[in-house]
Length: 204
Image (cartoon, rainbow, N blue to C red):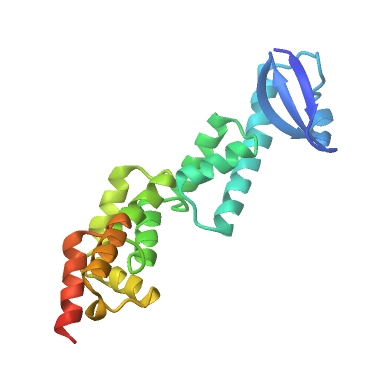
């Protein structure tokens, strides 16, 4: 194995290529500590030692710091670590590590996400947002079963009415058609919208 390239990323941080492939990122002091030099041979034992003692430990610390900063999905954490130039196989090990402590749980994340937004957004909108965060569909559906009720959808529709200062009791047919169309585009079911409008009229 040969160190084919050492590329400076900052004054103290370097990207290391071995046999023409990206291997890991090291700091300046670590290069000399492990005898890493461009166009010089490096043993498999040294590579594994660097990956285990330096790169993996650093990736675990970085992951825990990111999770302290804010709750994240597996996909979000994975992308952050890869952006930080940690090798993909190291990232997989880190994900398993943090999941083993319960720090990473996509189902729990989805449930908390739904509970915090179900009174403001439609099920369709929430579903789309969770999909964008990389949570698989099975976990999203499971979270909805746990957290979402029809009453929540109706409350979300009422929240839209309040935000837009809409009074269904004072709308003409054209206005009614527009609000149905708007809420349909937002992902609310026709029956839920009809029920909310009916309740407003009944309570007039």
